[in-house]
Amino acid sequence: MHWNVVSVQPLSPLELAVRFQDGTEGKVRFEPSHLSGVFEALKAPDFFRQARVEDGAVTWPGEIDLAPDAMYREIKRSGEWVLR
Image (cartoon, rainbow, N blue to C red; front, side, top):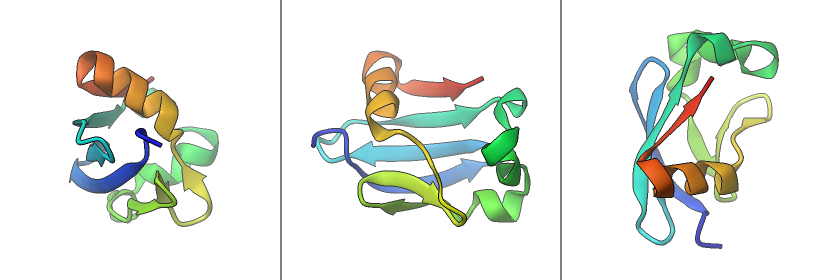
């Protein structure tokens, strides 16, 4: 799928750079208010930096992941996906 993530790089606390299979690139930014429930672990900078690509999605240990299709749509539209 064109929305498969092929690379991810933590840029700063709560911000990632991503590149998709079709060459589309952009940023993912987490608002602190989004870091609850399953995403609470991402508050720890060392944990956040463990972001990796697995099966075309951005993932972290503990089965935390981001929906690549939603990420792709928003980055294609505006260059950034902000999770609020």
